[in-house]
Length: 116
Image (tube, rainbow, N blue to C red; front, side, top):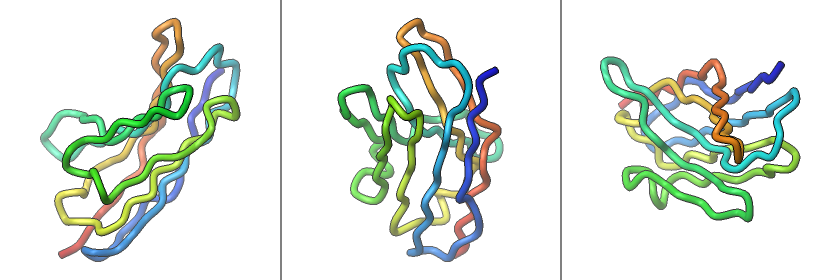
């Protein structure tokens, strides 16, 4: 059974930093992309950052220059360093793993709240 365990969410003041971590366990064959998505109340779930095998990264425009994704697809871990946080970054953040067979796995989500 595949599980994605997220950690690192919390409450922080605007301008502060948080680091999210995700560790995947279970039988996941050939990870293609690991990443983070977020969902604010009343809004759809949106991409924050992804990291493909080989290390190619992609970021939402709203977080470029502030967030950094890192990790190791072979070891099934991914982290998201979030700096210069803004109130509009407040959301539930979800870890995602996609395989070469287009299987999608999601974590339970971790709450990030940025106060002004």
